[in-house]
Length: 409
Image (cartoon, rainbow, N blue to C red; front, side, top):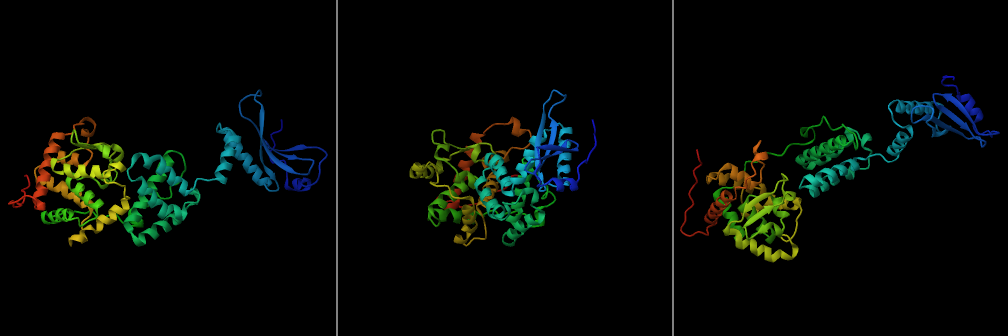
């Protein structure tokens, strides 16, 4: 059998094209490529192959395109690709379908980011809603419709630079999220793009400043008095008071459901779904805060939520960044309340591992694997001591003077 290649010519094809034939005829170009000459004068390219081994396997024929839309050169290139697929043990018909589908409906930037949000963030992070909104506003609305493999670094940078003009820290955060999304898509073989690999936060914005802000005794006392005087809206009176008492993350209270609060065991259990570390957090309910919490439960029972509604993270953060102005304090944020809780409990002599448990931090090293103690008694004692201290700072204890607490050596 002849193994000759490239037997056809453009001259012959131009001569045949559009000229009616007496019967349908195949003309071979070699290398499994042939053109079918129809009675209508139409020319159609075909690749013929056997999907299995041996002559008992029935030949298959796939259409590559029509001449002159698909030129002789392009048809030979397609046939060469088909032969490569065969050599790799792949079926050219299937691979051709994949290729056509990818060309007609490629994975877009928006598809890739949404894939990460739905298949990773939604199940593993507590900031799914906020992150989805942020990526939609800053990236998907700008370049989301672009095919991922066609989206160049300059397109991404245009998005990041636009964000950085207003908030450089947000630009860095968005970059990190996009890099994580593309890495996840690569690992899952959903889509491939390495265009952001060499970028760092400093290239598009800046990292957030590391705050060391801790409220003083005087500032914390004034904040507690402001809560008693209802200087904030009811939602934030409740949120801030509970942040002070428990040292919790805002997300744990924003999403807190009434069913998490057990007044028989006097225990607040943050489910892993609401925990940043995806580990449940167990906090005793101090007697001093019980009336306040039970009032919230009765007031909001119809909603199922301790605070009566779920406010968005961005709204709560913005309110928290401005709350200090109502008291004429130097700037502090809601997260600084959590840092104040940690610092002051350590100053009260509470063991560091108990403080870490109360704040919901993961235990270090192998303790995370083997130590599953809840330290409930130690936590309860710590929170009782803490709420007593808060009463003194708020001025609700008569004839008591606040003295500085000596740090342990």
